[in-house]
Amino acid sequence: MNDTPTLALRPGAPEPAAVPSRATSAAAPMAPAAPAPGPAGLTPTRRRLLMAAFFVGVMALWHVAVAWLQVSPLIFPGPLAVLRALADLVTSGEILTHLGVTLYEILAGFAFGALFGLVLGALIGQSALLEAVLYPYVIAFQTVPKVAVAPLFVLWFGFDTTSKVVITATIVFFPVLANTIVGLRSAPREQIELMKAFTASPWHVFRMVRLPHALPYVFAGLDIGIVLAVIGAIVGEFVGAQAGLGYLILQRNFSMDAAGMFAILVVLSLIGLALHALMRLVARRVIFWTDAFTDLSRGA
Amino acid sequence: MNMPSTLERAPVAARAPATATAPDGTPAFAFDGVHKLFRAKDGVDVVALQDVGFEVQRGEFVTVVGPSGCGKSTLLRILAGLERASGGTVSLGGRQVTGPSRDIGVVFQAPVLLPWRTVLQNVLVPAEIQGRDRQAATERALHYLALVGLEKFATKYPGELSGGMQQRVGIARAFVNDPMLLLMDEPFGALDAMTRETLNLELHKLKERTGATIMLVTHSIPEAVFLGDRVVVMSPRPGRVTQIVEVDLPHPRSLAMINTDRFGTYVSGIRANLNAAGGLD
Image (tube, rainbow over all chains, first blue to last red; front, side):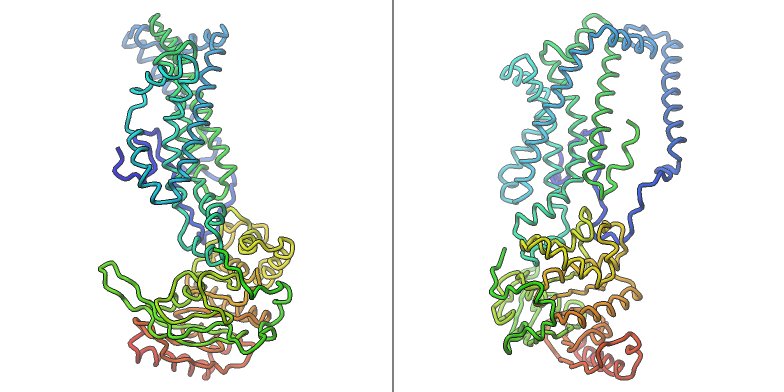
């Protein structure tokens, strides 16, 4: 585990928490969001072209490699076989119910986990005493692999979606909690002193300074959480389910349909990308004053 | 901590020069035998302030000058109610200071504006905290934004302003509730020399127009002389008041005055005093 519990990162998280650094007192005027050259100094059109070319290149490499090495499609299908399986999945309408079930588990689990992480994070972030009392349990719980406790949840909450929602929530909970705690403590001391000098109550300080200052961190946590939510739902479905994309993967596995499995993996990745993009869109609207979410988001 | 105050005044009436509103001979604020001890990390007490005492009348602009670590900021923080004195009494408008007061407006070295609020919304923060009438507060906010030359920037965000402009917003914010006393802790310390001169002049004009009572802490002797009716000179640790200089320069002051002999005499006199106390450099 993390030696430094203040570092708001879930170990093995898909990406680092984007920690905003634009200080309140930043003297440098913020550049307006013009269609200026991106991080690599490319225009948007050229960047998109580059992205498309890279995608085509990877697909071509995959196709050629599978054909060249004569890998059995039962073990590693080529991109065209996967595309065919994906088309089958969509045209047969089979995917609809399963996609619906898994999306529900992801979103409901995310909502509960994020809410719980926010509330508990806000409580712990308020006082060192609560942190001392509660945080060890949080860390202990986080250390337990969720895959290991998933069978218990299925035992307790049944084979339908409830157990998956619970598992997803437990996975989403931690990055949101950790980032909320760090975020609530990120407000500059001088800012808080100034509020106090103007006779602000602790509630004023929380509402007017600490909470808004925490938002960029919170969104970094939510962004990690939404991607982990996809994993949570699938883990839950693997343990025991009657529907969902994870259930479908297992089914394909039993029938030795590697291309079918790949097709579902593609769907899962697309879900992850879409949710991540949505989260960044919301983040950029809500925390418009930082540029923490403006750069990494365009891929989706 | 909301301190109920008997000194609560009608916000509009207070815009008249504060000298005229002084009801009796009560000073705006007074330090009497103030001590401050800090416990350092090694457990040894450090004397930050030793037997500091002086009074400031309403409508007066007093500047406190001294080298880094002379406790001048601590003195200001004690008056602002952010720290407690270890001994002695500190009074504001005749009442003992026990915590932050609604009668005080503060400006720190960093403007510490809230980046998600517009300039106007930032200026309104103290009014919101103290639950003042919103419409009247907005009028005062726009009034003071105009006085610091930012009326056209009311709907901009702090990120769109330069450092000097941000500090002007901070000054308008300190004025917004028409406080009895303004406390400024090195308000221009982070600005470049030219911006600093401009803001010194603007603050002087603002003071002339509003008649506010101001205590400004600085380590710049020329700034202290230019702005102050009186300059309180402090020695390095333990911080003591070594001299209080009446600055007898005509009002309104101008930047040209800085090059006059009389101005130079004040500056070199204070510098000599600080050097004698082992202060500067």
